[in-house]
Image (cartoon, rainbow, N blue to C red; front, side, top):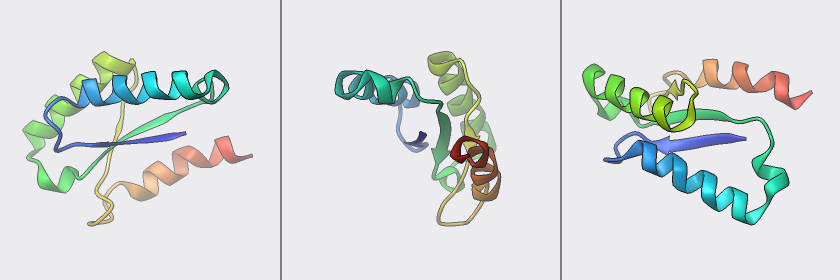
Length: 88
């Protein structure tokens, strides 16, 4: 699973927790699958803001998120490379 979280949201940690709760309610089997977390729209933030958002996701998920911008094509290649092993 790839969890894309809008990095421009004020409380990205809460956004992650909401996604997890909804996923677990919908399907415990799906919620048990490996996940990769990505903060999207990072092109709209300063490097300091990105650091704070990454820290919030780490606190909420115990994982380091990828920082990407789908529009600017930043970080997307690294994200896809991280997902490939799960597809086999």
